[in-house]
Image (cartoon, rainbow, N blue to C red; front, top):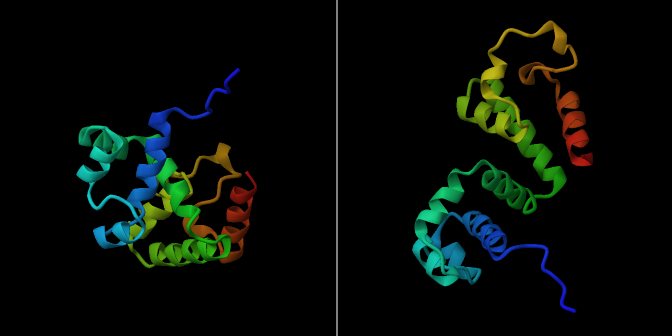
Length: 143
């Protein structure tokens, strides 16, 4: 009696593609034995390049990619990156604010909304101290 694989071929290829995207230039990919271009990746795995494009736009795929990126960075380094991006956001860097909001899975717009008195337990990102942000990140690690 054969065992059924937990993952479909499509899911495996999606994971491989998420990993492939972690290497921004062709030389880095080739050095790791990965296909040089999207077209080469598609041919190697027998899929259409349009499929790769659709995956990149898919929210779940973006989450998978983020997870694969996080796996490349140690938890301590990840906290350092998050704290640096928080400071950049506080200093007015809108790209840092958007990136940080995505990592914390909050809407970037919510930082500009009026606070809802029924949501007293939610802290505004800009109001968090370094200790509060570290505690929040540790809670996220535990989940």
